[in-house]
Image (cartoon, rainbow, N blue to C red; front, side, top):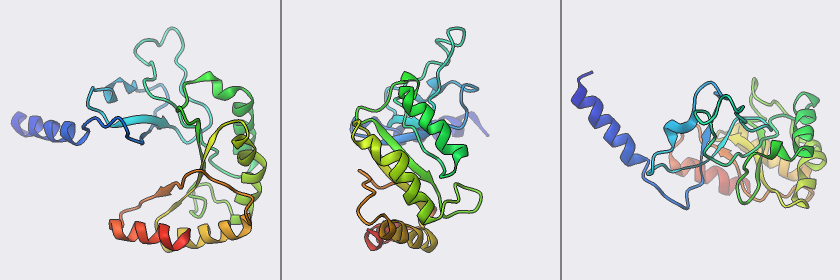
Length: 196
């Protein structure tokens, strides 16, 4: 790639990441401490938080600092409904999420794509039970809860409708999490308005 095209591409990317102090843009970070986040801290970034699909934030050792310092607040997630995920989540919550910097609102995300094979694979009933036992009590401690993050297809909508029905007023997310998987904007908006 010629250098001029690379510079143009970088200029476009930089412009697309123009700083917005009200941004709720989260960085999905699967890299733990293998790659420093510093590359995402330009003054014009829109990134305001990060999550890593788990309950524990990235905590660099003193030997890893300052290169691996984490510049964004962490959003913990209860990824799945079974004990493989609920037990570490409970432990992290008991330990105040390792005292990592959380968002001012103390956001927590609920189940990742529970309707998808290979993701959290929770039935709506399992998700209701886990929500009531592990997430809903955190509201009283001042946490703000994100709903299960279903995908934008019909199966996600159907799963979500059943979850809301089974919750019967006992699940009270503060915000809706939704994975927008390549539909036009109107499709995603339609999914949300037809589900809630």
